[in-house]
Length: 392
Image (cartoon, rainbow, N blue to C red; front, top):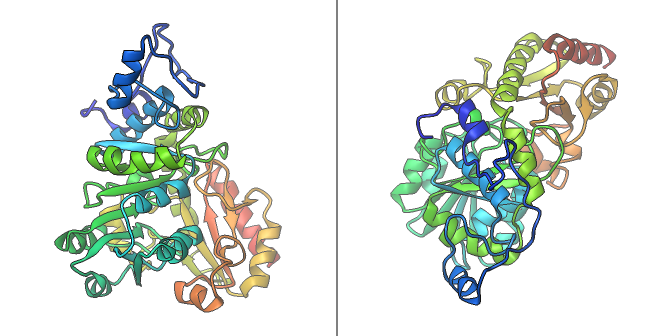
C-alpha cells in the first residue's frame, strides 16, 4: 500500500471485508460487540487486537477503515476519527495539555478554534501566547523551554495567510514542543504537512473529505503512540468519536476527493486571475496569485493554491451584501470544500464573535467575502461573480 499513488489509496486503503466479501465498505451500525466467552471479554478489555472492538465510542470496523484510509493518504502512522472538526481540534489540544502548560498559537484562526484557545484552555489553566503566524521572529520570541505545543492553520481562515510550516516546526522542535496544525484549507491532497514537520494534523472532514455537505466529522492524525496513548483515552471517555454511518459517508467522499479538489483549485486559480484588478474589489486574495504575500512559500509548501479565495469589496459591508444577494449559482452558507460553490461573509457570521478591532487586525474587513469553489463549470461561476459585481 505504501507504493500506491493518491487516487488508489483514496479508494482502496484500509478496506476491511466481512465473510460476505462485499465490494462496497460495510456499515457496522452497532454500538457494542459480542464476546464468545467471559474470558475473551476480559482479555479484550485488557488489550484489544487490531480487528477486535469493544464499544463504538472506542472503535468500530467502519470507522477504522476511514482512519486507516486517511492515515495512508496523509502519511501518518495512525488516526482517530471524531464527531466534528472542532472535536478534532479540541481533542488534539486538550488530550495532551494540563494546567500550567504553555501553548503558542497563530492569531489568525477560525472563530471556534480561537474560542478553544482563548476561553476553554485558559479557563483550565493553560497559558496561550498568540503571534502573527507569518512572522518567524514572533514565533521564536514567544517559544519557551516549557512550551508544550504550537498550533496554527497552515492556511488561515478566511484571509488565506500561509504559515511557514517547516520553519515553525524547526523552532518548536528545538524547545521540545509538539506541532499541531489545522490543515483544512491546504487539503489532504495538496499538503505534505507531516513530511514538512507537523507532529499532529487535524482536519474537519465536514469540508473536502465529505465534500457534499452531508455530515459533520473530523480526524486527528499523528504517531501511533500519540493517537492511541494520548488522544484515544481522552476521546473514548469524553464521547467525541465518529459514528459508523458518518465514517461510511467519509469513505465514499474520499473516493472522489482527489478529482474534486483538483478541479476546485483549478477553478479558484482561474477565477482569481480573472477578477484581479477589478476596480470594485479592494483585494483578491489567493495564494496562487503572484501578488499574495506568501505566494513563493505557498508554491513551495503546497501543490496548488487551494480551493478557497477571498474577495474584499471596495464598498464595505453594504457592497458585500449586495454582491452576495445577487449571486445566482453560488450559495450563501458557512461551509467550505463542498462540491457546490459557497460564499460567506466572515465579519457577520463565522468571525462575528471577535471584536471589531481584532477582526481589523486579522484583515477581516466589512467587505471581505470568502468564496469556496465547487465543481460547477468554471465559466459559469466566473460569469455569476461578474454579474453579481455588476449589481453592486
